[in-house]
Length: 471
Image (cartoon, rainbow, N blue to C red):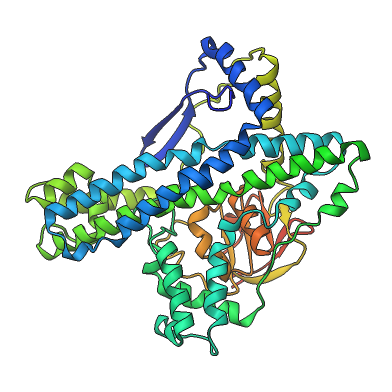
């Protein structure tokens, strides 16, 4: 209802340890009220308020709470206070994580830009390139790595080497303060955080010291020249709105989801360590299989037995090796409804956004290219294996089904990236644009054709991924 878009209530369910989503029933009784909201959305350009609200009102207290939770010295807490800390971390996550999904401003602002560009005959790929440099959060990790690298005189071998100077040490502390407890391996407590993988930080700094930093630039003038003269002021306004809302896309997910999730992991790991030392858990990681109530009970002396938690973990890891169906049952299209005019305008914009952001498969190993430079390197498959992230080294080409902002800390290592799914506004495309990394997205068959260690070439101009040499 925030924008007046006819979006049904979502439904979520876990099926054999995999999470599925579907839209709920449409509430057609609220169309009149939604039309009123839709009219206000278009008249007031409400997506601009979303940007201001996020950066001025929503973001600062969330970051403050993240930092406050992170500052608590868990080792010094007794078991009851540790249980309270975990409860507060979970409550914080549940309170702020929905914000990422509520922010729909770019869907509308970006969609309006792409709809207009289509009418002017401008390809979506040309317009998407104009968003480069508009997402500071996407480049934040690289900015921290640059600061550390610029303060060093020799390539580091260990995390201690990053403390070689006071300036580099401070830059590292700044990085860890804001990124150290963000999960990097899936939206799951079981995934490690940046701070738990210091070798990745060292590798990123080494990579930066052996090649110049990339900068994202947008050639607005050449695309603007393709717009009819009478439409250029409108183009300027649409582009400004799209760039402003684009800045939220990676930022709110990391701040509201990835970081708070890592803080829950931090508390649960401390509880798991204590329970493992006391013989009430087989391993600290087994506590990820417990509910919040069970963790409370375990810290107070009751709760599930150690073998129960271990068995749950074994079952979940087995499920992770299965390739689940993307869809359960037959697809049922939503009912056709004649929408009132302002809602129809919003839906038109949203459809233009989805058309621009959808998969662009051109056949096996071929999709949509991001960038204009070809890159080669060893393929590193982001598959179901536990150590997939740990195997990433500087100069690798990441091959995955898709990526999320959890992997922002990995991208500075990469020579290129290729995914089976994704379009112009997938996370992969966003990071590739911001960091100047060659990418091909929406290219089916990558994981079934490429083996870990193969030398591959990512050619974004042709939109193809080629195997050059089998590893």
